Figure 1 (cartoon, rainbow, N blue to C red):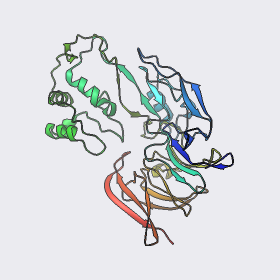
Figure 2: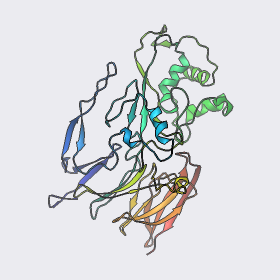
Figure 3: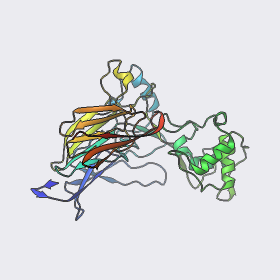
Figure 4: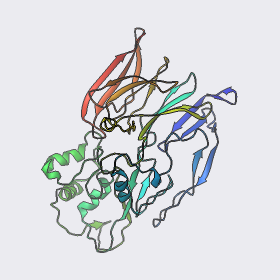
Length: 386
């Protein structure tokens, strides 16, 4: 990048908080100022949180930073009312608002801002390209053993290993994690046990769960557990007795309205061009489409995206990443959409650009399976005109 009139080898770190940190690659010195700013502290018993967090002064954030009531979606008639009901009593108003028993709106969300798809950079001009999601999540801590509650061994194993994704109430998360309620109507015990041990798709295997704990977990999930009081650290617990771990996390819950759309006013996803030389956003466009909404005359909303962009020397940005299954090419200088192709399945991946015998190609993995989209197993390669 060009900084203070000099060419500097730099490293850029994008974050789920929707900001970019830029450093001198040789020294680690920030190229733009980073401020330490005070942030809210936790009020959970015995939890200590940092008093400050780092904020890069430049470039400006490429996604929203603070959740407020005036940002709640009004895309459809009942959107706002349904979201207000879900966040009633929850804490919000700062991106570093810590977890709480009342509930905390996390924004930017657990998946960004930016996510694992990463950014693309053109080393010739110091431009960085990054897609971002605008999705709020709801996070809540609950006491492990409130007075009068009997805690079973199977539930304790579930809360320790499964609740973060499938929820404390087994209800899962729309488009993300399946509900385990009435799982016995869909899976047999042997099949479910193998799934937990070995994993499948995005779910990892839990081989660390011993046979005894796995049996009690199966009994709990399949509603066959006796209600005997669990043991904790080798001793029996009485109802209301304090445990070593005072709180459980109720799970990763995206904040959707009653219609299944994000809680925020659009855009729900963007594609951004950031000038790393000046520390400025050159352009930002809505990225991703819900066709059923645009067909109703609602302007392009953007959507969540998983997977990143690739930039070519010819001035193109290729990116899929959205649940609408579209693979797109944009003008890297203006953000103008130049080409698009509907994939057989959503392309939640970052494209690869390569050359064979002087001809350039771009390939994308189209596997779908997230955000409620159909799963598949296709690779599609496209030849670029000479």
